[in-house]
Image (cartoon, rainbow, N blue to C red; front, side):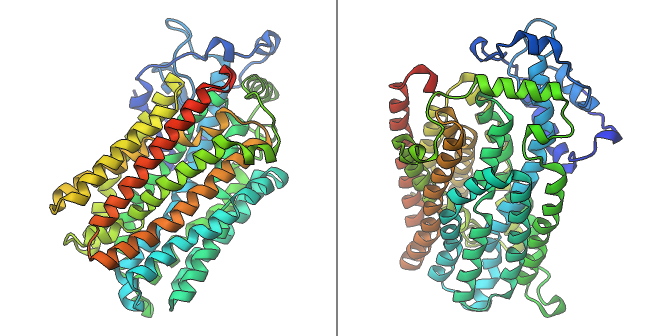
Length: 505
């Protein structure tokens, strides 16, 4: 299949879109499933009088004719094209997901580049493992405190303006990390950066529910979350090369790292104003008929339940998922923000460390795609989260018991890959039983719990490393975190199974 680009459709389709396209072409051939009969739009008149305008690029049509697209799972019949509904949602996905993913790559690089900076910053500034671990984790205190308010603000002022403010401020704060000289100044800047970024990821999860039916969210969330491993694949080598600029213009390499990697967020804030409409009703590239199709389909798939904010915040299912996210993030960020130092301790140079860290996440990209597609195709979430987390826990147990660097690195790669496979299914769970403002509150509350875990994870690892002189105890603790998270998710699955069928996954 030849992927052909047309000049008229460059817009938000940039190099990152091309990466997504090539990553998904193979997955598109796996076969697709038609929208379940009970999820089809019931208004026959809307479907008949609406014609989907040819705003889809020619290379996207090639993908459809080849048997795959971003939103449908199966053709309606032998030799038939995908439905008009799926054409509309496919158009929205290709317009939005690549650009949203690009923003998330920049966000995650700015969130985790302190781990690469630490390769030289800790020595230059005299930071101990405990001081660095606390500073790395304090980001998530600000991040946690402002997640629920940030999603409420998004609903009031609109996605376009809110994401612009978020990105412009976080870009400037990320660059200001170059000015830190003491542990206290490091803590302050990291805390403020967390406040600035608090509304981004939960806001993006909420934003997806404005555009796509519930049944498609696991898959599309997985495509969006590809940004996490990609941020390491891209950010690892880039960060290591920037560290090599040490001494240029009288600045340390880690100062150049923060300055250079903070700039894209600020510049992309202005691109947000052009490429992210507040919702389908404000999208200039959708016809009125396409907007009606989206509105009708979303109304049909709206979950049963109260749409109010406060009941969602007291929903035990949301709280339990939040606790699971807390446990998983204690473990995940106990590894992620320490991974460059873990790899360097194996004997790699600063430059080689960046490339080795990048290789650790290459397998995570197809795992994330396959996990999200499998979850959506089967209409199942719980086991798509619990089983990979149990595998990750097992791998960390192996890493904690061996002295072989090769075995440790292999176990970490498998464990990180398995964890990545859960992203689409886990982050779409709240939207499977909440609706309206309740979705915003539920996602925000889960994020708050999860980021408490992200606060604790790096700090706990720092204390364990300083106390034991190695990473084995940290690996063991992280394995327990993933195992506990998996068991809680299984318990939530039991609770969901006891609800009416309309509220199940």
